[in-house]
Every structure is written in structure tokens, then in C-alpha cells.
Length: 391
Image 1 (cartoon, rainbow, N blue to C red):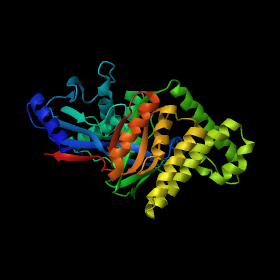
Image 2 (cartoon, rainbow, N blue to C red; image 1 turned 135 degrees about the horizontal axis):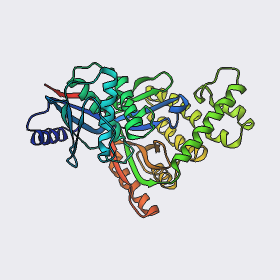
Image 3 (cartoon, rainbow, N blue to C red; image 1 turned 45 degrees about the vertical axis):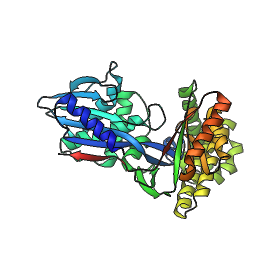
Image 4 (tube, rainbow, N blue to C red; image 1 turned 120 degrees about the horizontal axis):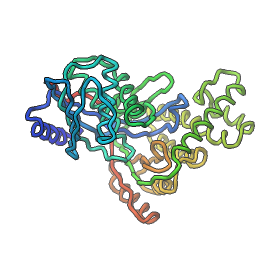
């Protein structure tokens, strides 16, 4: 968390509104470390809140309006606190408007509005979930300002609902939950069947490099839907083939997949192998971290990417370049694509002392293959969302 960024926000707030903020909150971005396309298969994910995020500052008004300012571009919009509506003109405001609408539905509409401004340092479009950081920080600050008690899970659920209904993104719960439940030097283990979130200790002498390829490939929505349909068909197959209940691929072991893959349509078998294997890797990874074997954990990340490349086919040449280069770089322990795939970012696990050299080597390898350098950023496991100032 950047104290300088908070100070910049508070200064801008005072200059814009003529008073100090009454509440300031902070919420981090996130990375996905293990567990890919497992959320809709009721599986497991290991993720981490990271050391960049969004600050949200507000002060109550005497009327029922909200005056909201984006602190980076100093654009602003005004709307009623009790009835925020989606906006096409100020699309950036929809994350806050949706969060407010969800909070109102949970605790009731407010009688007073507020002035608010937000400012963050999560790179937009980098796969670090700047939107979830904004939603989560906004919900925390708005709830505190009206004295409303809201559970951490509800904070995440309200943020997810904002994405669905105001931003038009049918995301899972991973981004918001990680931003809420993050802990310094720990990963977050998410169980998407039970909605339980646990902290798993992570070594402090390693960090992650986020490598943004900026690659964007067409037909992503169709590719996502095709893979989800394959997983759902595979779950229905295993429900009839196995002698125990199966409601999602989470209920299928790797040995069971091996025993029955030849009985399935070839595409369904390949697609289902990925989330089934990922669930196993997450569970194994937790045990490896508990025993202090970070090298074996890194190997699971490489295995995860190989599964994405060969079974789920949600990688791309740009992501493969980063991961293949990482395998040959001293100090690198693991690497894989992060998020939905088909472009975007890869996450690389590296010894902290080797991070700078590894980042330079990855950028060089990427430029040699693709002509442009990918962006690299070192991140560490950090604390989740919280109130940092309240008067």
C-alpha cells in the first residue's frame, strides 16, 4: 500500500471539495497463482492480494446526491445516492454506482449523499483486477460512512454483483474475494463450492512477476463458452460413469479421468482434464507450501501452464513465450498464464533477489520473438481491503 498515493488522493480531495475526507479505504488488486477455470466447476483457486490497489475517499453531503471524481483523469459525475443508474457517458463510474446499488439493496438506501474521489496504481488492463480493487474499496468506505455492518463475504458479493449488473462483466467471485481476504505473506485459498476462503502462508523471500503481453485474441467469448459447455457435458458424463455423486468436475479425481477418458468425446475429455488437474494441483500446492517446498510448488505452476496449452488450449504464443523463457532463467521457480487466458498476462514465481534480472531476461526474450517488450511488474502477497482513515 502506497502512503504517497493516499496523501496525493487526500490532497486532491481537499482541493476539489474544500474539506478533508471523513473516510479513506484501500483495496488491493490480485493475481491468480494456481487454479484456472475452476470457479464454475465448483473447484479451488490459490490467489494473492498484491501491493498495488485503489484508495477511495469520501465525506458526507447534506443533500441526497453523490459527486464522484476519478482522481487520475479528474473527470466527475453526479447522481442520486438512493438510486444510482448505469451510465454510458461515464463508464468508469459504473463500478462505484453498481457497488452503491448493491450496498443499498443490502442495508437500505441512504438519506444523505457524499462527495467521493478514488485513485489507484493498479495498471489498467494488466490482469491485476483494478475493477475489483475499486469496487471493494468503495463498498468499504460507503458502508463505514453510514455505520453499516457488512461481512467480508458480502463485500465481495456486492462487488461481483456490480460487475454483473453495471459493468456488464459476468465474472466469478475470485477477484473481489481475493481483494477482501488477502493477507501479507499469504495466499488466499478459495473454495467455490462452500465459499470458504483460507490463508496459506507463503515464503517472504520470493515474489511474483506479472508479465503483461498486451496480446488480445479474437473469439474469446465464444472460446470461453465452448470450454464451459465441454466441462458441463463432462460432469454429466462422470455423474453416470462413477459410483459416487458428481455435480461438477470438482468431484472427479485425476485417476478417474484417466480411467474413463477414452469413453468420452475427445474434445470433452481434453477440456475437462484441465480443471480436474488444476483442482488437484491447488490441493497439492497447499501441502507443498505447508512443508516449505516452494520449488515443488513452482513446478506445479509450470504443469498448470502445460495443461492450459495442451488440454484447455486457452494459452497463446505470446504467453507461451513468457513461460518458456522463464524456465531457462536462474532464480525462476514457476510460471503460468494468469486469468482467463487467450492473451493478457503470465505470472512468474521468482526468488526476490533474482527478480530484476529475471524481468529483464523475460522482456528481452519476448522482444526477440514478438518485436515488442512485454511489461513486467514485481508484486508480493499483501493485506486485503481495509479502512485506513475514519474521523
